[in-house]
Length: 411
Image 1 (cartoon, helix red, strand yellow):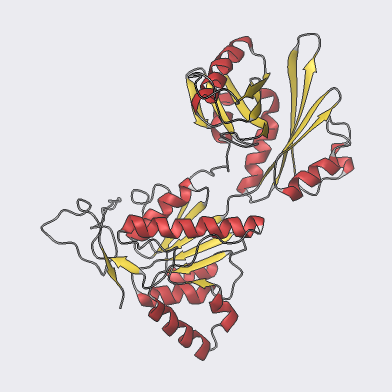
Image 2: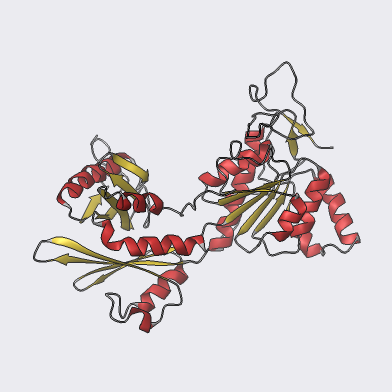
């Protein structure tokens, strides 16, 4: 059960849909940012004749002004370069006071670069990274911008760019990819903007109970590709998990074993019982995931460690990588609080993995907890019963999903 791929920042699916319908549109992209700004290079927003469709370049005054200029640019069918100085005095109600400077490319003739946008989407669907190269030049005869875009992989060769507007820029393209950040250079008579794109890291959630459901929702907001596994179709259903990119209804341990785990895979084990947690952990503990976290107390983690080492299922170094208790220390009690603590740890580890930074958060202290009562229910076709962890029964006097979730400590 899958839904359409969701790109990292820009909603190219919506962009292509507007091109197909021949509706006017404008794509605003921050190509240069200095000082303190509401967004950084690569942030973008898509505008139609009705206003902002998706994305953001920071909101507030800047985005409102870009939207106003986008509507006018669409009418004239002319792309523009916009510059914003955000160093106004705090007393100026209509000025931004961040203190930085932004340059935004506002592109209106998107159909000219449809092939590049389509190639980007197709590549990311196959989990192939690359660079979206943009050459910006001013047409002296019309005083409008001439924009050429090209999607290319990181292994670009000179022959691949021969007879294109990007001939001679293969070195810059490779550098932008290796640096993993946008790059702008001034090239006579214009500018070269390079924007690397990478597939979203995968968040594999073993368990579609209430915690898994909440973590799936937060995972989507935090730019993960979310996959949820459970062996109960009444829990692993689209109505309960609208945020999931993929839902797998299968034996949990076997599904984790079959999943193509790599360094950009983040695994959260929150099944409905210790035995299934153990099966899921055994299926991934020796594989090179970027993160593996398992719900449970320190005692549970200690017992599993002893069992795994004693039976030769894992080495001490394998278990040292496991985050259990899972999540950062928030004194979490409700389902939602537990999910937030897990999500915060995912973001921390992802940042460390991607940028080599030090983890700013400590591991959770003390015992982890499971919800004592369900907080939400979902119904699928065929209809399902009450949502949540099967071992936790709601009080018949309180309708499922109508009361605040509480937590109990695992013994």
